[in-house]
Picture (tube, helix red, strand yellow):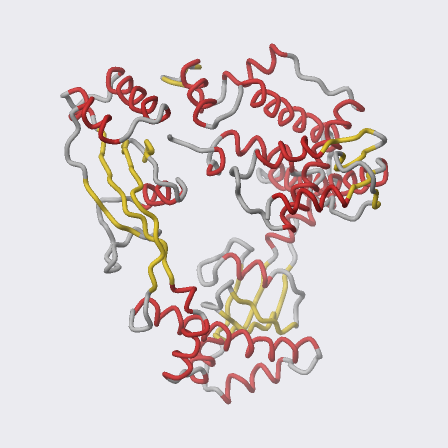
Length: 482
């Protein structure tokens, strides 16, 4: 099938479900009162009881049948479940409604259900079938999603920031900074060396990390020439694609599909998640997106129809297996060196940051480090937070978190770029109401205030409703999935 509900991160239904469970209840957590007694009740909110079965049905929206789920994940699911029920109570409190007619109009404008830029009932029904969901359940979730948007607009709508706040936002992004910079990697590269024994010890302690999942597949590309005898992607071609899709949904095997449509050029591959074969050579005629879809399809032996941009493929997964890579593999050795280097850099950076935090590392120490390690100090002028000609944006954002006359360390997530920086001068700026960009920063200020309102509203919700969790029932649910 084109999609499965357990592997649906790019589908409209995933976005709807995730849209239902986030703000404003994202900060709600476990920690309500303990209750015992009825093991069929998982939680009570304002005297209204919610059953264990209802909670299990909720989990099944996100988890595959018989899937093991960690106990802390079950608690996260319960937090999300409670958040959804609180939101439904807020819909009632504020009398937020969505008529059947409005719901129908909203569904019909979703691009997932269109063909030739028009709503297609067939596409809608195919979507429901592929995601194994009833129309009534999908429409109920879609309705909650739209009501949530109305609720958030009710809470945060109408906010107009003052000129002072707009200027603060503008200055935070556009203030100019003169900085001095030392590339710490030039320092680390002189200090960090690893022996063969250290490399071998790391490999033996992390051997499982270098196991790779490989899938053996059969693949057929579907194009108009194969299916209808010409080069046109016309309605006849797409009818054939739909017919193949339905055959797969109905459980037909690859041989019956090949026979019915007289398909040839079935190619077999064994590949990993990087699209490489067993010799770690990149398979050139399989795109990254197609590889991602193949590995997103699951581990079960099955057949899938996959669309990759304007190309269509039938993929049969024959086998999924783990293969151990050895230390003499160049990719493995390079990864070991990267990880050992990461740990060493992390320790050295932690030492410098500790000195900075204890006020034992100032501008004179900054200059001394440059001289002792024979690494240059580079002077840089930053026009604003978007001035990424020399430094990456994520590093510039770190620079803008600190005031002038400060020594700081900035680094990316893997320490591939690490710098010691002295913020020499900060020049503040402001914006006039007549500026063409004023509305842009007005909206940024508004978004910041609105998010703070959501956080305040979240705290209000916690205090407004009495929530009692039945931890005995929760333990029963945890044991069911483990």
